[in-house]
Amino acid sequence: FKGTLDKYIGDAIMAVYGSPLPLQDHEWMAVQTALEMRHRLHVFNTERENTGQIPIRIGIGVNSDSVISGNIGSSKRMEFTAIGDGVNLGSRLEAASKLYGTDIVISETTYKPCADRVWARELDYIRVKGKNKPVIIYELVGYSDQPIPDAKKQIIEHYHKGRDHYLNRRLAQAMAEFGMTLELDKNDKSSSLHLERCQHWLQAPPPEDWDGSWALTSK
Image (cartoon, rainbow, N blue to C red; front, top):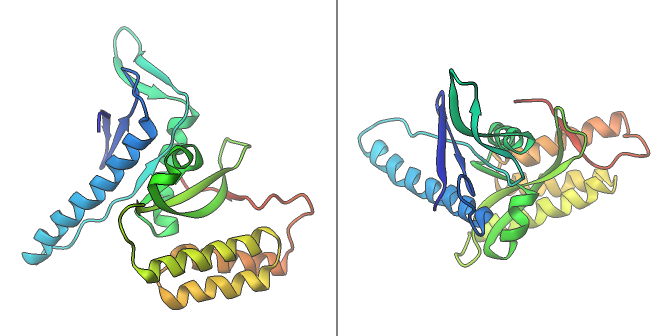
């Protein structure tokens, strides 16, 4: 989808959209790439399982921002790449996919231009290390014109209700909603995570100026 494969980083890859050439609707291009990667991996894993091999799992983080892009380095070592806070956040979102138990995590700046074209679940409101301004992050569920299971719709509904209670300090009601999502899917890590936070805040209430954000310490 017109992205540029920037580099390999160990077992990870970094792709850039809108560089070196401007790209219209670059957020949507990145989202489509993530969904296509999910589809291709499903096909690949089906083949692996048919031959008795262990399936491969991946995490994807997508963020949209203004970054520094071009040939960066010294005369002895120079390469085309992109750097900046926006790149770092994308990397943090990829790492956060393990924490929230989902394969694709996108930021609010990626989600908003694509909101009418995708199913998504608002996961959290986080502050990453080195940044003061929190950011809303989402689980990318799928294309809006493709049906999703009723159970997943119910999970999203209860989870969003739980988040509303949580952000308004109605912690007992929040725990009830997150409990409902876990009844539908006992492996929903995002709900388990929020249940732990509710218990934490019940024992040590947040300050009056709490904005509902949570500091993400993992890289």
